[in-house]
Amino acid sequence: MTVRERTQEIERMTLSPYAALSEDSRGRERDEPPCPIRTCYQRDRDRVIHCKAFRRLKQKTQVFLSPEGDHYRTRLTHTLEVSQIARTIARALRLNEDLTEAIALAHDLGHTPFGHAGERALNRLCPGGFKHYEQSVRVVTKLEKGGQGLNLSWEVRNGIVCHTKGAWAETREGQIVRYADHIAYMNHDIEDAVAAGVLRNEDIPREISRVLGASKSQRITSMICNMIDHGAENIGMDGEVASAYEALHDFMYSTVYVDRVAKKEEKKVDKLIEELYNYFREHPTHMPQDYLYIFWNEGADRAVTDYISGMSDEYATRTFEELFVPKKWQVL
Image 1 (cartoon, rainbow, N blue to C red):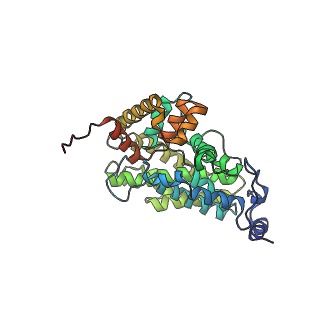
Image 2: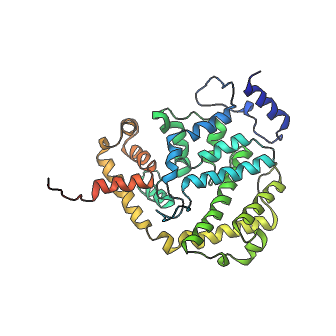
Image 3: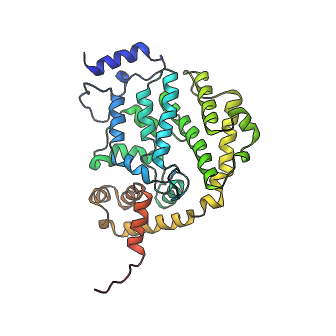
């Protein structure tokens, strides 16, 4: 018996009847020999961690554009917090923690530079629109490894594309990640907004604080415990906690996410993304070779969208400066 087979046996013996067992996976787009050590979901998790798109998340905006200070969240730290919250819930409900972790770590791989400001700009420019969760699936199926993709299992890909809105994931593990994403960003965005001076803790409605708690830790703990108490059969929250969760979501979208101070630079993002988009659409040969293959096979808009959405904030800014900002004339 291999290590993987022993792990699969342990899954059968210990996980909930509602868990997605690795041995029951619908498989990959391209068949591969199984790993003797890792289950398919463990293998998926490792592929995500080692891919280029995952590393680029460290220089992609979460909410605040180019924040001054070492402690503001980036897209990478957000991803890690989502993973931690999701794994905690999955473990407590005896669901498949490996599948949960793989989905959580991959859910934002297709996110644009400059957060949702960049996403809105690409959505306006790209024919057919742009959604980061669909782009995340494209990253793992098409763009990584020089066009080969990561060949992840069906369950991970389903969890990625369903993590934000629309249809719910078909696995409970994927449904947990959707909640964990919301729990993570609402709470860490409060902390970042307070640090940035655009929100005070006392601004949070008292009824929300009464139910969920006054601190980030208390709020997260309240939501996690409620989901665990709600059980594995139907993933979700109930009672006062569910109502407070929705109220906190509405509060954040009516305050922090529309705050003039926090969002004052976003018009510049729109201009930057548009200029890059138009330039590379007119000069596709100036993109790296991998994107030229996409240009030849799928057209300019698809290639340019893939290229820009994969940029970090810093790389996008530097590229814009190299293309459109005059350089000093140096006399030798």
